[in-house]
Length: 217
Image (cartoon, rainbow, N blue to C red):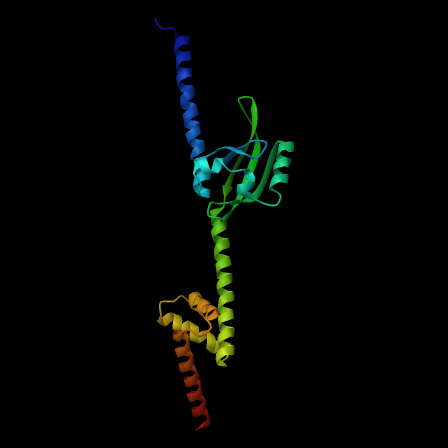
């Protein structure tokens, strides 16, 4: 007859490794970015999500220090504050392998593994916010380039800003250029792009014709 206590002990021994495996897999594939580092800010462990979001392999990320990834003039002082308080909440920017900066909101605390004390940071990257910031920056840069192009054409061809903009816009519509790209060519090149020059000549001719009709000549 089997001893029930013996069966329970065997089940417990079998379940514990399974629980550890399931927990590891859950943490590794969690939506959160997980980092474990030592007192000297060397990474000891990272989850798969952190690697994917930042664009590193696990080996590459583990060869870095916290200050290589968490970009802030206060990174070291923040880390020392965490060591002293044994926990911390905050936000920093994380630098990806390609150099992009991602906003990272985190919570860090002390963890003990094998009687050794380490530091775990768990947080999320707001990719929507990152995309929104990029969109706003791109829109601002596009507006700056457009205004520069209008001013250059106005001065170069002695036309008003409205005429200059209409020439660029109509040229962009009639070609494969995006408006901002055509404006960039106007700014960067010493000569007006042919597509825009033709539109300016046509616009000036139409303006002169309209003026003659109004004066009756």
